[in-house]
Image (tube, rainbow, N blue to C red):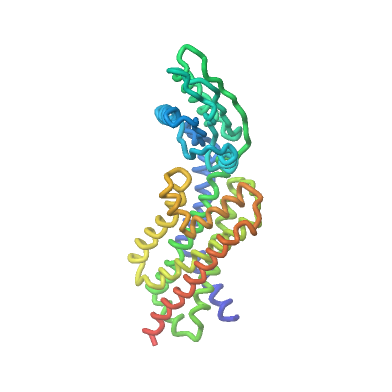
Amino acid sequence: MNAFAGLLRKEALTFITNKTFVVLVGLPVIVAVLFNLAFTNERPVATIALLPPADPALAALVQSDIASLGTLHVTLVTADLAAARDAALHGRLSHVIDARALRRDGAVVRGRIGVVVDELRPVSAQVVQSSIAALVAKESGNEPSIGVDLSVIRGVSPRQATIPLWLVTITLVIAISSMPLSLVEEREQRTLRALLVAPTARWVLLSAKATVGIAMILAMAALIVVLNGVSLGDPGLLAVALLCGAFAFVPVGLFLGALSPNQGSAGPFAALLLVALSLPVALAQTEGAGITNLANLLPSAALASIVRAAVVSTAGISDFVPQLVYLIAIGSIASLAAVWALGRESVMLT
């Protein structure tokens, strides 16, 4: 225990005095100051769920007309209104267009379009209403044959929808990009050699480094939440999610650092792994099914799903047991791999 406490003190001081610490502390401030407008304002492009008409030809025409407008991005096509509204309520898209009541009467399209807009997204809501008005005018011509029914829901604010991705990003950046340096820099400064020949178990050394990394992830995530004034649906679930996410990815970074002889070799691999873990998750809600299916296989997606639920809803821990177990399993396997990788070096020194 005394050895662990001493190593923990050393790792904390090393981390705080390292130049990367300044960057990590500055990241939440940058998110709050430079990107805060992106959380509270919207681009004039609305993401929508479309409930198409039953007539395949008319459905294709409606989708083609929507695509030609350039202001609406269809992210979900479904015949289930409840599923579409649920997606809007949980921030996976902005608004819903229900065109199931449209029908073709000769050369004229008749019926009604239901438009469900999110009151927390007034800019894109106006875009949707203007776009539907243009669509109705195009299909009705001089004869007002299409009516519009407008309803309002209260979904997820742009800030709430964006913050979960930042929390996952900060977790991955510290774990994958910073943690390898804690081993590589000691190897380059030849202090790692002294630690490996000391009568201290390798897992104790790695545990001290991991504890500091996990604490830093939790601290930086708390700064992001506080500085951006985010209201959390379930703070307890968020804390558990970030703790399990840190436990999953910090050992991965230590494993990478244990295998890398210097910073030049660690950097490219860390950057590649960071992109591989984060990019599919970031694109999953806006791109095709292929990206979504790939993202769902990644541990970063498991973390993102729990963090998102904790921010925007009051879902309990019991709803995410499989994802939490997945993260813990990844962390356990990576921990064993890191101990093994560091053991290879200690064997060569003895």
